[in-house]
Length: 69
Image (cartoon, rainbow, N blue to C red):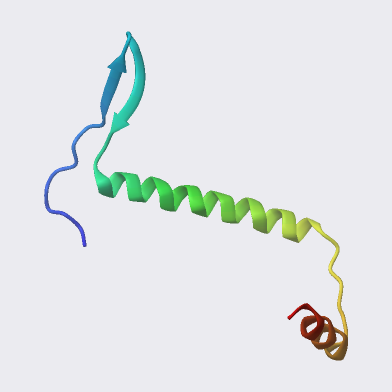
């Protein structure tokens, strides 16, 4: 659900003269989390594609699954 309210600028909390926290719109926060997850997924995919592809027989795969359960 998108809010019709205008997004507010992030507010920076200062303690002892140093920035310590940020308050931002919840939708902006959720968008940031989603973007971070996308970046992590892309990195994981790149690592997976860099590995050598190998195949197993279906029976061997099913046997290893049966032993792990």
